[in-house]
Every structure is written in C-alpha cells, then in structure tokens.
Amino acid sequence: MRLPPTPLVALAGLLLGAGVVALLPAHTLFHVEAAHDDAGTATGERYACPMMDFIGNKPGPCPVCGMDMTKVTAGELTREQQRRMGVQLATISAGPATVTVRAFGTADYDNRHTAVIIPRVAGRIVKRYMATWGCCEVVGQGAPIIDLYSPEVFAAQGELLAARQLGDAAAAEAIKQRFVRWNLTEVADAVLDGKPPTDTVTIRSPVKGQVMMREFEQVNSMLEIGKEIMADTPLLTIVDPDRLTVVVQVPELQANFLREGQRVLIATDDRGELPGVEAKIDRLGREISADIRSREVRIYLTGASAFIQPGSLVAARIQGVLDQDLRPADPAAPDSWGRFTLIPKTAVLSTGVRNVAWRLAERTSDGRARFELTPLALGPRIEDVHGNDVYVVRAGLKPGDEVAAQGAFLIDSQAQLAGTPSLIFPQGALAPAPTASDGHQH
Image (tube, rainbow, N blue to C red; front, side, top):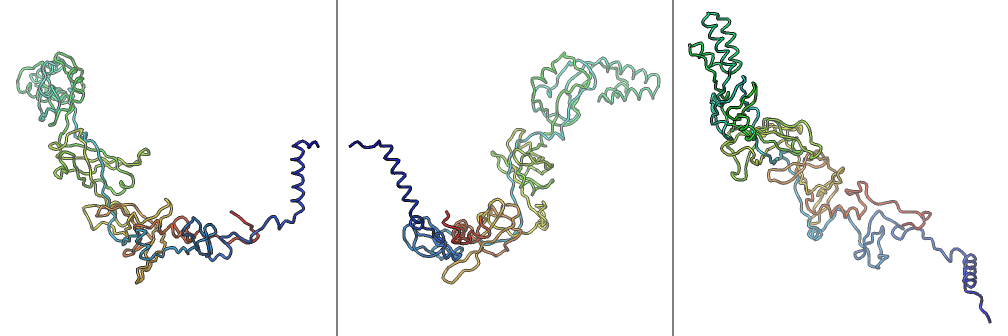
C-alpha cells in the first residue's frame, strides 16, 4: 500500500486538531481567576516571603516556594533589627550657619601700587644705574635709573637762563613748568640758582619699590647704552614687594557666605599659617563662572614679602557666617550671627527635589523604636564647629528631635516594601485591589 505524501499528512493533522479545539467548551481550555494571587482580599498591608523575592497583599504561603510570608511593618524596629540594620540616631541641634572656605591661588604683585618709570623727553642713553641690570633690585624714591643725553632739555635750559637774565619772571615760570612736566624740576632749579646748563639729565624713580623685569631680555636691549629712546617710552616697572594679591575661585554656594573686607587666613606649604600677614577680601566677583560654577575672590596681602614671593602657591582659609536672614554676617561679630536648626547630612534622604528624614516618634521599654517620615525644607549645606556636613532646616524638625543618621535608607526601603509613604512614594505605594473584571494582569 502506497502512503500519501508527508505534507498532506501534516496538513490533515492540523485541520483535525483545529476542528477539535473549536468544538470544545471554553471553560475546559481557559480558567479566569477573579483577581491576582497577591491581591484577593487585600488589606492594605504587605507580606514578604523570607526566602524568595516576592511581595504580596495578604498572608499565607508564598506561591513560589510555599513558605509562610511575614508581615512587613514600616518604621517599627526591634532592638535586634536596629542592631542588624546599623541604625544610629542623631539629635537635631541649633547653632550658627558657618562655613569654612578653603581655596588656593598664586600670589602676584598688587598692581594698585605699581608705578612705571617713563622719561618725558627724548634722548640717548649714556649711563645705566644698578636698577637696570637685573630683576628685583630695590630702589628708593628718587633713585637714579639712567642718564640721558637730551639736546631738547639743553635748549630749554638756555631759554630759562635767558629769561632769568632778562628779568622776565612770567617767561621763566612758563619755561619752568615745562621742566615740571618732564619730571626734571631739579634741573630748572639748578639753572635758576646760577648753575650752567647741562646736556645730560638723570631719569629717576618716582616711587620707592622693587624693580620688576619679567621680560628682562627685552628691557636690557631697550636700555642698551648709546641707544636713542623716544619721549614717553616706558622703561621699568616698580612694584611694592610688601603688597601682593591672590585670586581664588570659590564655589558659588560657599561664596554666598562671604563679604568684602573680611579677614582671610593665609598659609603656604613651607611655612604653614602666616598670622603676621594681613589679608582681606577686597573684591567679591559679581558673576558666576558657567564652566566651573564659582565666583572670583580677590584677596590683598600686606606685609608678605618676608614670607611669600610672587608665584608662590598660597592657601586661603576664610570663615563665612550667615545672619538670621541668610545673608553674609561679620565673622568677627558673633552678635550678628543667625541661629538655625541643623541636621546632619547623613540623616537626609533626597531625590534632588524632595528631602525627608526618619524621625524617632516613640521608643518602648523593650527597646523597640518607631520612626515616622518627616518631609524637610532645607537651607544651605554648611560645616558645623566640629567639621561635619550639616544642613540648615527651615521647616520639618526642631532642636531636640532625634533622627536616623545611619540606617535611614534601610528604614525607607522597608516603607516602600510595606507600601506606606516613603522618599520615592509620598502617598505610599499600595494600589487598589483589582476587580474580577480586570482579569489576570501582570
């Protein structure tokens, strides 16, 4: 007997099976439960399997492994549970809102006290004094810098001498004012005293200070003997070595604690703290750097030359404090400081928008503790007198309250499992029990 082809047999089997399924009643193929296994008669409570990762809404055996599920209770911990979870409490305190700002910068000359030596007449250099031969020479006010051969000055002396001999006081005074503008008053006085005119004059330093020549090669070439220079050509820069400046960048939140004029403590790696250096904030930047989220703080130093040189790395420590209106107060005037409720940073749970803490609501004689969720309105993050990070609490807690400083995250996780209010679920995570019409859903 010859068998039919295999494809025909397969097709016949499929048709026969489809016909049998179509003729069977629906209740023999599908069983629709009235609700999910973990819903049923939900009581608003949560039960967890101690073995498997399963959370249900009613007591009974675990549908996965068969073990009896235990009730999850949020915020209530026995003494043993507290020990295993590492729960530690902290007492809410009250105190000033202070912060210690630590910043680093490089010292430089204070340009407010910088002067430039500029000859007001043209001429040819015929002599150079010590100030022009190297960096960092200290010169006094009136110290000689260069001798300049100047036909212009020689001619002006002749005019002054002629006016003096003619007895023309007005003309003599007008010519003398020309010498005053050239910073060569002593040359005019010498002519008026009867001394003969000279074709060489000395250019002197107008101030006392230190010669700064960071581009010495360029300066040395410009001051070469025999070289002619034009009028109003800058020659040397004179700085005050005792007056320096340090520019530091302070994070924008910490900069809100600072004020201009307040004292700064200065230190270097080799000498440590330098209380003998007078330092204060002279300018607080009005703009925030978008790249590094900081404000520029300019600090001026006085009496620093014995300890700090330009280019030295300087550490600045600034004490900041707020008044009762959260504005910068004077660190040297404790009466102006505000007083705030303070909470340790470790006790705060945050989503970035919402902040909460778990407050101790009750403790029983057997050591059982009950915690309750407390929403917080926080102020700035600061550093207390012991160097610990704390937040200013604007609402939610009061001094004397106890909160979970360690283990708070585990307490909050327990509340999420129980479906009660928590950090992530302010209203709780319990959903209404599904009805029979909802069918079996996952």
